[in-house]
Image (tube, rainbow, N blue to C red; front, side):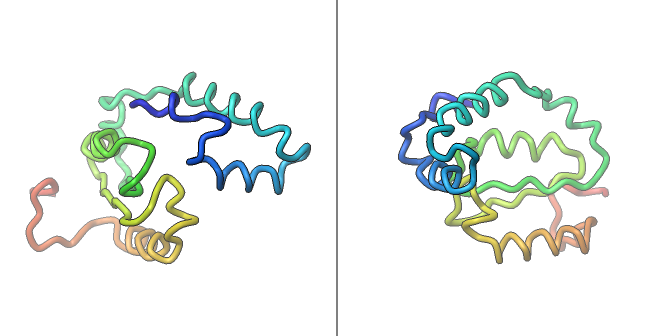
Length: 130
């Protein structure tokens, strides 16, 4: 996943995050570069979970992504496929900030997932035999 190289202090894609950070962080905007450096270091250091390890997760799991997410869709679908009881939601018109961009749709998705962790599908393909 080619995520970290996209994260630059002055990246236009981070305008919202940078502005929000400056409004609430002690020290304000001056602390943004250090915050971003620490965030990128955290992403680079892990945790790194192999897809095979996700196969041991027995709980129903909802994987959510924006259709214009910084996490590549292929990686997101790999995560979904690795989870035995995985469900996938790709939210249209959203980036990595789905909760802020599409909160009502996200609320509906989460409520449906929580209320019914066993999908009742008319034509299951991946979940056949469950």
